[in-house]
Length: 455
Image 1 (cartoon, rainbow, N blue to C red):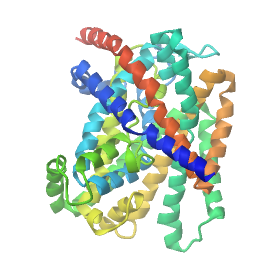
Image 2: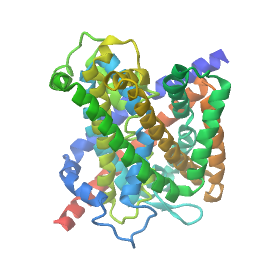
Image 3: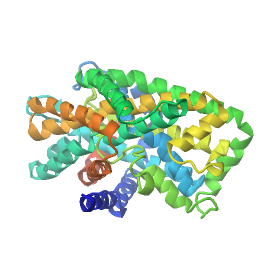
Image 4: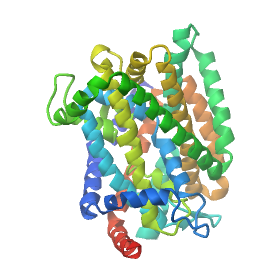
């Protein structure tokens, strides 16, 4: 078992290694240059689309632009934004934040392309229902001969969508912040209670299908982002004299080895692009992985560019807004230099420092909602992969496996399973990015046509 655990750990490390970095970052930069930053010129237009200005009830699809974005965001906004940013700063100092911003710009463009393709090349499942996502745009865009690549994506998605790590981290946060400091004994019993509570909440939502998932996400995500914004604004107000210094340090520290704990460039890439120590914690914006196109592919629209522009807002909200808020809270309070805490404990220290007594509990509320909402969208991704591989009538069985995995995540550390899921999650990027790069010229043509129509 020890040898097997070591092999699986090596597999996960290899999956998230340099080749994936080259594919995600290099591929993203290629798309950025290819499009000549064109999607960013439509940022204001993307906001109008998100607000429903161009909605047409007769368009094909199941959910609105706003519901598609919040469903995708509910999977990306989670422990990575709270714990992962703290780890990145621990590794790379304030300059790490700059490289998160760089990764977000690359990620915005990647999400534009992948989600535009999800609408441009929608296909039908075995029941005849219209579906979008990498597995469909691979077949519909590249041809039936590419089906093995689509099946590879779906197989990896089946495993990669299991929420074991997320549940495990949430359980740990509840134990560390709420239960143990208040004298509650933690162990198998308390973890089982947490696990079953999560199963009940998750089951009520996911067994209702995409419409219930999207409606729940569209209510939860905006309210929690707003609450988190208010809490960090309070922290910044309490430490207002430190804000200009650290905001400037983010830029000056980005290109130099620093005196804190290492190299800023390395630390920032870890924070923004899901590498090294926070590989498990900072699935920051998932650009290029292929999860978001499955949500955006269900949007009610006939315009691929429109949905791509809405998807582009995801990394902006996830990384440039939420991750920056976390980073500033950690930096201005000074806890990153005065404590050995790491991950979620470091972020909790920042909140406790600025809001003694209640700060860490308010943070816990945000962690809980961010983490629980991600359980809803990942179940949807898993069922879509199951439907593609084994037929639409069998997708419901995935939810039962998913519910079992929640209990496992809450009650065991299972590093072997976490590494296995982590590795398969990384492998989803290979078919997604290969197909996106191959089909990018078709998206460029569509952008130009759309631009002419808008003008």
